Length: 113
Picture: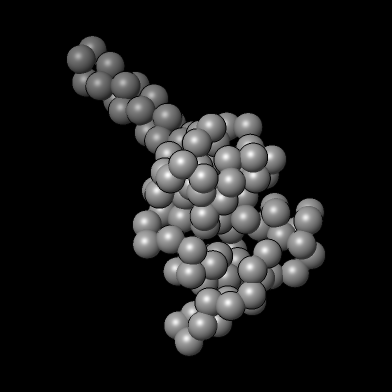
């Protein structure tokens, strides 16, 4: 009986691990991730900056994060994972810019958005 209970418990726990929030999974393609990393390298030394004006690894205003984050993501960009921030960046590019910001890292970080 104990053995079957342990098996059931193990199955339930593994199901929970499979059903982890999307923040723990890859949310963007490797190509998009590469582009987001270029922006990150030019904007912030860490993914969790929490300045008074700019937040996260992309240096966004709080209002920009609020507009492009998914509802299940943290309210503060500094608390979001790099993948969550990348997902929001892809949404921003697709809905607003319609192009990726030019970030020529490591030679230059010119071209804003």
